[in-house]
Length: 325
Length: 148
Ligand code: SF4
Ligand code: SF4
Ligand code: SF4
Image (tube, rainbow over all chains, first blue to last red; front, side, top):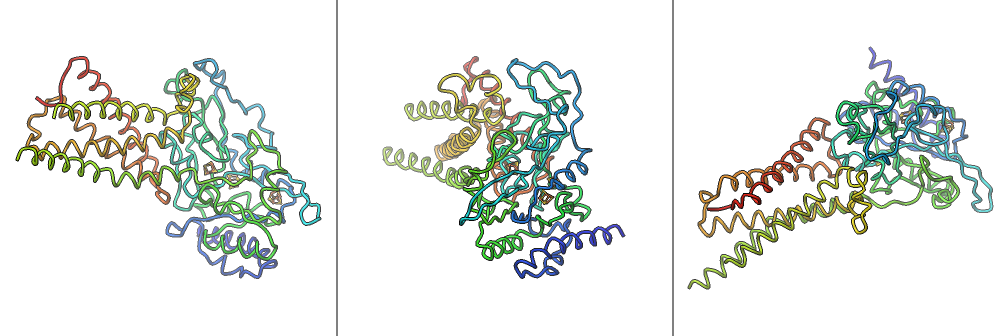
């Protein structure tokens, strides 16, 4: 019963989302909606497509995210425990929960503004920004203690009950997405003075809604259907035909080795990157190389290591037996 | 024979030092505790640098371990000449290599392991590392050898 309803919700959402794309590109909407429920485990990873042209910067997505995910937000215990050395930064957003113009532990999506002139045309573009949900997410893979996790459907999330707030995920994320709140989480029960510093927060792509076949809140709430979600290959196909049609550009397909967040823009992304305000909590739109690639390439050499050891041992044995003769 | 034994020991010491240092660098502690602020040690706070160094040192350790193992076997030394501490260290290093290899697999794209699996792996790897460090300290201080 619930599946039926939620599936209908999904189809409604994605037809709406795909429908507008159809109007522009001729991609078939029903096909897209028929791709299957969002909670399908066997399905390839899900990606989102963001058509920047359509965004009007109304922040409906921002408010929907805050409403739907409010229960996940941190309620820090105060006063914060003393941390050593004294220079360890306290990061407290609990008194600034209203901030919506950047990423914070209480704001997982925000709108970036860009004033650009392209082909002689002056344009004001607004761009919803949140976690990119990378194909091979460094935030997950390099978390020293398994607090972050990637799901089969392509989303990555940080478990607030496990995170110690060391901020390594933010450090290794090419967009510095996760944001820390001090005074919450597991570290309080361990050695709060010496290790840990709260919990890291970021967009979890509404994993709990996807499990119920519901659309992520920001996608559902958008009056302009800026975002759509579907299997990666279909989203990429759609992104490319849209880009071709509008003579546009794609971002997120190759960045950091590939992500599940694909932006399509009528303006080149380096131009957008130059125009947006960047800095703390405000990610760039620049090309970024695959951060995990060096490790992945080195692991191939790891396969050769035993052979090298074996060869050395044989070599030594051979020389020695020759000497003995 | 003596000379290769010495080279081997130095090789092992260097690899053990680098792999431990870069391993600890996987945790956000060198930055917090100013170690990365010491001139020349800034790289200890760079996670991608220590990540790659840890992999490189692991390659060296695996090669060395396989070399020593087959050298033993081919020279007919056999495992029976291993001292008790040697036995323990062999076991711990094997455990470190196995858990480490599983962590390398975990880092490949398209691998989606559960929190529990990852946490068990991380903790096993860290505990084995601590055990090896303590045992190595003991054998160093007490001048215990690997083989009799
Ligand atoms: S709700 Fe849609 S149109 Fe409004 S800011 Fe968000 S993405 Fe843009
Ligand atoms: S964008 Fe950053 S936080 Fe998001 S999945 Fe990629 S590495 Fe992780
Ligand atoms: S997917 Fe969910 S958590 Fe992520 S920005 Fe949208 S509403 Fe927020």
